[in-house]
Image 1 (tube, one colour):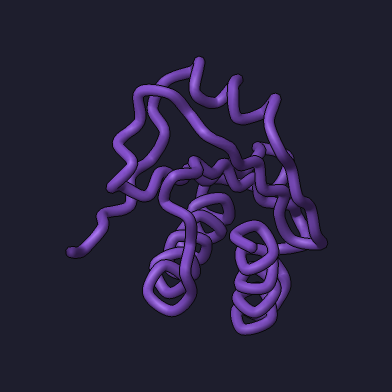
Image 2 (image 1 turned 60 degrees about the horizontal axis):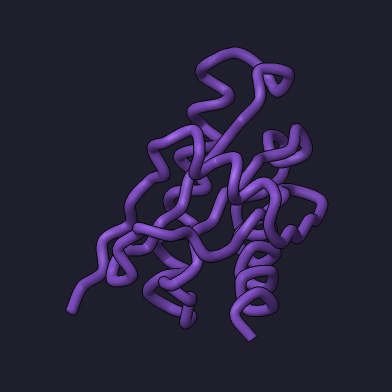
Length: 114
């Protein structure tokens, strides 16, 4: 069964996730936890880039990179779909190589799902 990736939509969902578990590295901060009333068969994740990072073109580039990485991660490593995730990008992500960012995020999600 193919699982579809969904974004969080409600303000309450973001607030609840911000109060739960957190992991941070050089490129992103990841908040994760269980949300009530969420479809457990779907992978719930949202990407946030702050305006301090740059203009809309730069922020969208970061979000595209994150979406691509998460699609690969969902296919290659076992990610717990019972959790909901909130990924907040840091400015260091803009000028770093895609391959390095991808390896770092794969390691973080492996740690989360142990």
